[in-house]
Length: 114
Length: 116
Image (cartoon, rainbow over all chains, first blue to last red; front, side, top):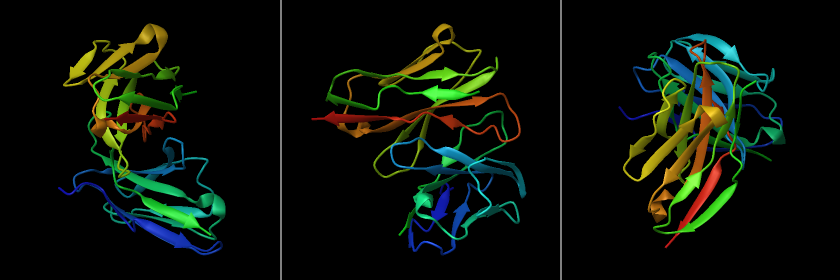
């Protein structure tokens, strides 16, 4: 078990470009979460998957954001037409299905939009 | 509405001092869970503890201890005999009873700097 893995670690892109991030959760975890963290703030919930089903989306997730988990394993988060305000650390976390088990976080993908 | 407040933005201590990080939460649910996470400079959030709303017993784990008081809606974290390796951002978080997602709501974090 290597923990939650996120790629890339860093991404610099120009405003207006599309970006995609990948998250590989802990293998036996069926629940996967995406969070966003900006400087000086705590992580903010974006969306949640149980297996391949996306069950919850935050109001923070504008229509430029889309997340998938096609086979219930890895997940991708795509941001279309990036804006400077999208610059943040994007964190992925997973947990198993036991009652309120803790989230295990990856190292995150730091996005910088220039 | 759920809310977690960590009023201390930054704390600086010298090694071997004790330090307490405050956390105050708001929720309408009677069943909820509280968490503390550590985020060292490397960036990865590390789970420290989970406490459910029905268990008000204080917990000690090595140099770490947690004081949960429902009467004041607080879940404070104390590090005894702090060390330089304790330097990190510490987040308190809340989740309500098991529902679809049960996403954690985080406070803004307290940055702890321990100097030698």
